[in-house]
Image (cartoon, rainbow, N blue to C red; front, side):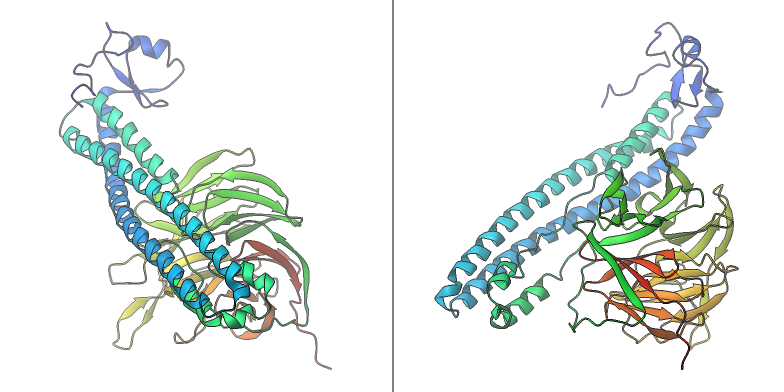
Length: 520
């Protein structure tokens, strides 16, 4: 790296000139000739003022880089653990299948051999992806470490050109890290004996114990939400609810739905790679690259799509022309749930200092309102009293935020522990209205909510795979729909029409009765 920086302040293009200013548009040092040629029409800042400004910028970028380095190191550790789990899962499944297979009749031998081959192929593909991810993370770790070391050394000096170069290099390195979506998911699609189930009606009974063991082993996913085993029951039809259509939208679970027009909506799946506009026919009208994990989406009254970016601590906008830009910087807090009130275009964001379920007195778990220009309007930090007379935050992990467009209420999907949570409803002014369920021991895992014109709330529960209709006061009115898979997202279009996104990547459109029929 000895030759990485120029030792003098001479212009790299016009050798006889010296740097005298910094171009505000290009973040580069310029000489007098640069100002009237390559940078003509731009605005400039003199070196003394620019040195202070870019030193501050470099300090902020250094903090982001150090945080990214910690995350990369944690991912490397997790990848190593995931590799071990992959070996254990695959080898354990092979042993189990082979031992159980000896007890079956000869007519099942072909099924056993096919499943064994598919698991081996799946294991090979998984390990290749893991090794690729490991190499990428190692390279990013080395690059970011090098830039951090250089930045710490340069902050004590007054070389503006070096500071600007480091500022650009660190930002590019961090952006590259966040843009890379490491493929760490283990493929378990063949672990449930799908081929055999299609050929033998009684295969489920014969393989019952084996399938239970396999399902248990596939819960050890270190990276993403894993749907736990649920008790099964016959699907029930509910009076007042009509199924309009059903279509496949993605190979992964539908994480969030944002209605756009009567027959179409934006959505993204759990990978967070793409933001797509899809019709009820299942045809994708438009697709934009997002690369945002654990994000939420919403839309303003003029059709501007907003998406939360927890890793980058910001809210991004996606315009109709496909232009993506950072809109709101949330500083040291990570944005998750996001909602917009159409009347005022007020934006409400769920913010946390860290995504976990351990809330202490120093934890930051809050809602924040922003104007349509991105200015902070209000911060909502709701607490409740404890048995000892103290207080604790009601908000633990605000996974999603939804706005009642009819009265301005704010709804929060609040995850409180692993596969457990509640729904918090606040008034437009920030006062706590009710919590559902009111008792913490109730088994309930909400994934999304939607409000209707009667100020009722539709709640999607992963435990029962049911959609509940709640009264304006928070009581259960009735069940309106039973899902085939876990309901992960809801999109309300008005007049009782609702899109339900499920964990298998399908979307079902239903229409339910908002008002109860009068009793005869």
